[in-house]
Image (tube, rainbow, N blue to C red; front, side, top):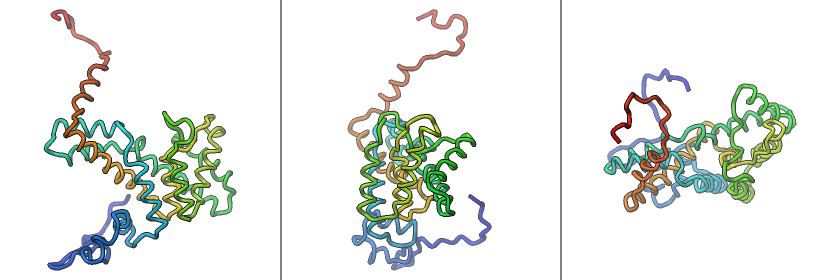
Length: 268
């Protein structure tokens, strides 16, 4: 990402005057509120145009698929933050979102970039299996992990993969990125010497890219989705607080293996 040279701040997303709020060229009150879904509005904000029915269906499905995944680290961080500062839900949600990185949630973007590299080779005339193998071996040679495959719990294909692919088939989007994802899956034993299967982080870019979603914005989808899940956890934390319980459990499980001063523990 480059530092811009603009001297005048410009945006084509929103403006307003005394009577009208304009969002991407639309009158917010007259054309959007009560007339479009939040999914459509998000797409409009991002892309500057309304989505097709197929794009709406696919984007909606991916947001549903990734909104909630239990007490993962980002959720625990958010709940413990909220327990310590219950007057600032926004801070707790932000704490959870800050945990959306290359391991949790961010791998969808990374997988999408790998698929885009494979697709570029295919568009230049390289057969899909050869293109997938070359890109994957290149990533491994560069010391990079192959994102979107394998799961600590779902040893077979993550069930969300099939559900998202079904939505894509029914919506009639471009399926070439699904073919790329499956070609990479088939090559896992050769590249990694492991039979790793697609997980939801590999399926999300496969369907979104096929629906025309930009690869540069892929990380935003799980961030937006997980925000909804985090708000639900904050609301539950109000009536069923477990933030301090999570902290206490970490303390109980902790094993100190550093040095101790002479006489430590003698008075216990």
